[in-house]
Length: 472
Image 1 (cartoon, helix red, strand yellow):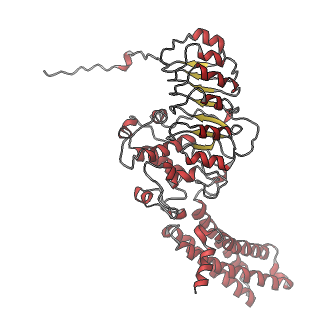
Image 2 (image 1 turned 180 degrees about the vertical axis):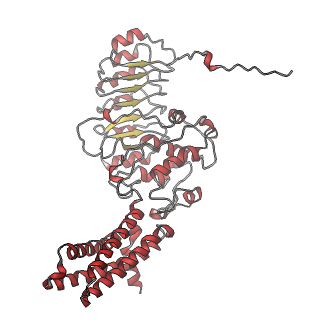
């Protein structure tokens, strides 16, 4: 009895890895024999009688086996029983019709073709219902979907009053996670559609470890390479972009839970621009796919990626099926020499790097200057000076550079004149630096230079005249 249970469990192991083999056998066998019988007029060929009989017997037996394994899988807890029920009963009906077809053929009754047509219908409906359960109701059009689609957020009038979970996190989970982890399907016995289920976790453990994003399975699985079978979401599903992962990372690390508002949470300077963008109904994503190198590159060393992720660095592909990477030091703390050495190992793959407010020194920029494929570089808030900028002159592919809040002088940006691809340079809140924009534009004619310091005029249309009576 023990050996039988082990065998059955192996057939339906953790979501049915072998189960589809058993299910597809009756679909293939029964469809082939029925279509052959119907369209090849095999009933008129006595020589085909044995072949049809054997094929129907095989289809009937595999249909029964599929029913048994399906019942075991339905009881595994990975699927909602109410959703599985229609497929379950259609599978049983299909097995019964297959048995009837075999018996009628053996008895050589005249209405076998009609029963076979019914069998084709049953197999088709049962197969469609099964596909909807396993791969989602949209499985037929899923391959045509954009796997890098951005989550649609509702516009938030005042993001500071938004509830972090309901208004920001839940839309991400709904768009990217519910197809595998909700009431209809619980892959790995994990549900992410309700707070209680998120706290409960699944087979792999707790999904969220508050204040420890790097220990949370939810974050850990998102950061795995898409080629890893444990990566979430599956590679054929819409993937989370960098900003969505940043928001989830911030939600967990800030301990915002399910009730806190943004104003009650610790919001880093890295998250503020994303939250501000939500007031317009979406996340801000300036890293357009068109800015990526056209040349294909080999995948990065997996040990290097794991080492960075263990230190809390968010390293993810910049696009689906791409080996080019983005590294974001969200919550990773001050950058160490060891981490910079690891970045150097990614010099071919790394195209976007965010190391704002991480205590970088001038000598640290020497290593960053070796990352020859960088397109975007965030250095805002670091105490770097003109002495460090000279190391960036080697980044000939750089298109975006943020030096806001650094210690560069008015003469510092002139060292970037050789960067012919530089499109945008940000110099907000650079203490003591009175930039001569006319001179800078001559040195960097192709670059949009933004020093901030805007003054927004008050228009007549911005005010409202109150004509009521004011009581004293």
